[in-house]
Image (cartoon, rainbow, N blue to C red; front, side, top):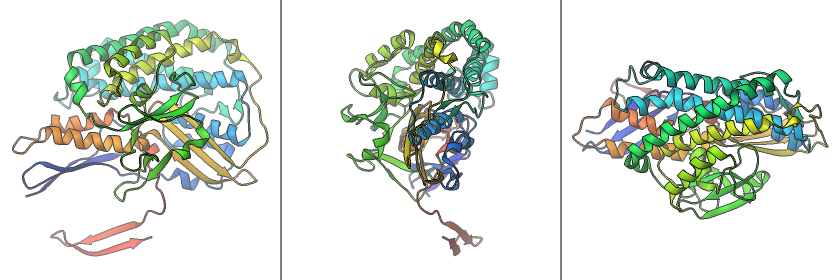
Length: 475
């Protein structure tokens, strides 16, 4: 008899999702999918709002990555106001973004994922969590808390609040960094950098002890996309888009953010509220791609800061001229990016422009704008169209988790088919491995649930044998 296995909910991620695994009559995996079971619809209900509200409104999608939406929205507002953001405001925004990268990466790896590696995929689920990690290694847990704390403090000092900041506005920012804040960050940043190095070493050592696992776990072909400068150096706040295929061949390069629709399209499936972005030149699903830390490392040629640069070079040695495909490498790239962001914070603290009072510029309003940022989870796209009064007529948000939709589903399917075998017991540890594959992508499911077109409400009425006797559909 065929059988369905359900993992509901997927744990240690932001938002609500479930996995369904369908087995055939022999007990082999026939199909496996990640389902996002919540619907937010921000793109629809912001219509009619003044576009300059978006930096504070859009970040209400999520309490984990509000800064990313805050800044992507602000960059879109800059475009709509034809603004040339003053140097000081630009540098304050960059520091805010680096604080977000630091706190978000620290939260995801240490608080949500590290227990799988340090305690074991098959360890007792009652202990395989952040509390179990604290009991097993109190010193590491304390470092993890302080890493995230510093990142949130950087956000507060540059954006006004740790969560849902208000600092970035159309054309700039509303306040400089204070003397006291600059002094505090300078006094603590070197220790944070060292703890960041410690975190990368933990993951690197785990890789060295489990090379085959990293190379094979949820490893599959996709394209990759991220932002680089003209020299191909990794960019987190600004830059231009580069896309490569599964073999590392460039699909497009130096694509201005406002031209993203020249290369990217979105497909829809009837079983998910998430969209399925793909490279136009390759079609769907062949043109499906991944974003985020692993993708950024695959598409970039270099990284600018010294300590993170050493580990980036190690990654490129592992890659050996080809894209790295194993999903567990997301964690290694994530921790190196965390270190990179912290080094960028230190560099920014030495620049007096962060205390400038020349912080806002507004030009002539136009009717369409695009703002893109490399959020911790990957490329985040905001695209607004407004009327002559500045009211939103159309809003398109393509978030990182949406762009990783095919990747996460491929991870679920690949892992299920690798570990669930006919005649063998399906253990909790095996099901946890499927969740581990999803957590590699640090999904923010709240941000990702936007629908294309009209989603009907469908109600099935069934009898006690489970037969559908009537279906009601409201369009």
